[in-house]
Length: 374
Image (tube, rainbow, N blue to C red):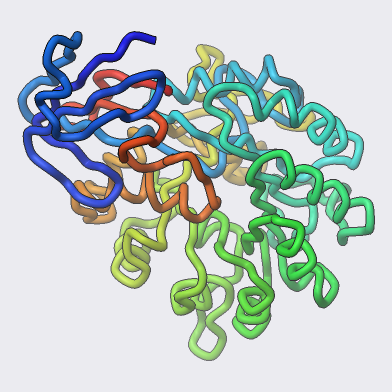
């Protein structure tokens, strides 16, 4: 691959914002930062005034895109379609997310995982369920919810050996010690779709849980004498959280409160995106149920929210507009923070010498100008 340079009026490297910086890319890696001499004689892309160069976005929760739902087709070709739909929104690393389904579907994903993990843009996997609380299931099918058995520990251990893996579970729905066992196998455990009390969440964190899935949604809420999952996560510095910043899933006041309490190093933007993103069809069928897209909202027939019609670029813009985040924090919540929560390596979520050249160029309004993947 020919070396080239990018001259950026502003560079966010995953940690800080710099002015007037040159990045040199060679063989899919960052060769140098801020070294104009290294860029001499190289083809150079000069970003327009006000633009910012940032790490490619990292999305921990992607159910689908481009008209494809992972549950319907857990194959490399289907995942490549999903990746392409999200790359248009600045995402260069994502975790294809399988929502609660039968053991057969989970086995199909695990069998295809070695090939899926080689799809450019796939950084790992997210298994959301089926070890969830029926009372907080959202659009997850009741009939497939269950407690984990021995085969599940083996499946998740195998998946985590292939690529970084997040497992969303309700801690009150798994046996004592189950979280520690998943963690010992290399799985990153998130609390979600849970009716747990605060003590149960604290025990989950003590066993090694590291985060919460779509904070505020599908979890027990805070009351005067019981913090619930929401209050426990906000209060516990051991836990990070993904949050859907689309203005539909979480009220702006709660977005602002979570940002103030947790900060950009614990709070990660996620899309929870469905097949509608990047698809002309809009609506789709989710496990036999028609899902309608109207005014940016995806709902099942009973009005239940069914994932989100959201790209990471819009989530970052919303973080500034609705959450009150600074530019630096909005970009951090879309890059370094999710990469850290998922335990991703290879320089994901950062721009650093030797790291992957996963980059996104944004104009002053955070609209996509260009995307580079390795």
